[in-house]
Length: 243
Length: 243
Image 1 (cartoon, each protein chain N blue to C red):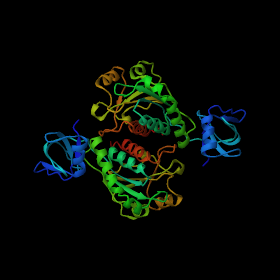
Image 2 (cartoon, rainbow over the protein chains, first blue to last red):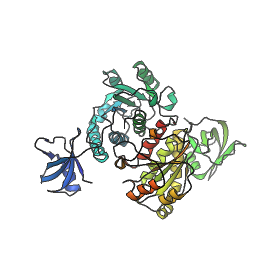
Image 3 (cartoon, one colour):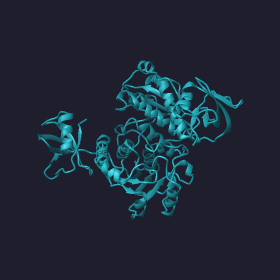
């Protein structure tokens, strides 16, 4: 298996590109590769290539593309994960596995029980961190598409924005008003909203109702907040034959 | 929410029981509860009760049952997870989430790419640890049934034993010979075999073939070994309407 690197600025015409400092450091310092090394590069928008290292600079690595490689196919439904921000590393794990499952975008939202604020996320440069996590996961799962991570917004702002996809919201088993994914018509583009640890407040559930967002459930057992989005994506892909 | 404790030796007739030392310590030392405290106890075989602490002893806690509580329902298909042992904490995470998803049993198996041996697992008292992890997960997800953790066996020994359930094996996307769960008839009792990091060897795939174990896949992207069983259980429950 050739090691993979993220090269968003690759020049397909000239069949070459330069890895940024972060990727270059991984190549030369961690993997100790140099000129002549066989690698793979992905452009994040569907392109994956066999490539060769030509020059190692102090702050970048030049590579020459050799031939296109077929990446793992994208899901047949374009899914945006709209995720209530979880505390600490839990959100990293959510982004990692959502990228592995094949989501197109991740929209972090702040809901009543999110134990953080937009300001705190910005101060912690969390969006940049989540993008790195997504890139790393994409390399490992074989995709060549890196999901876009949107800047965090409040749940209210997200619900108030114009919908560009079919919206669905996962609810706790105790809500008892949810449908199974199989009972919902397949949409080609869907935004799946998943709640925080402790779930939605009654006011949020009422708000989802007013916004006509259909509720979905995944059986009667309470799922860990960190695992819920992955489990929901698996159920959605299976129900809609969209893997 | 009342804190939950595991009480496998509860006496339904006498409506009482004694928590073991481990559970008692959690009650009195960690949660700092004492006589009169309202708790819930689960017997691990489907019974969940509202209970009250009567006496705190040095090495146990006596409780009196007050009334039965309805636990989260079990899945409509009885699933045994037959899992190639993953290294370190990864296997703990697998057991935790399998218990949360609702499996009936966990059978750890040693396959070619498992980086451990049965002797090492026994020396490390891993089965006892996994049982604790399963109990803890069951408490949190609302089940009253604790999945039984079988002693580890080799893959060959498992395949050679008499099947007590429909057997299915999850395979890597690269195998390209797998079916989706939806394409497989629902069975009331199923053993789902999941491979280690790196997947099955060609010899193991040939062995599964000779044993007539149908292969299932979950789309074209490579899943983390630790996440694969949870994702497979979600797909199975959704495909078979078995949540």
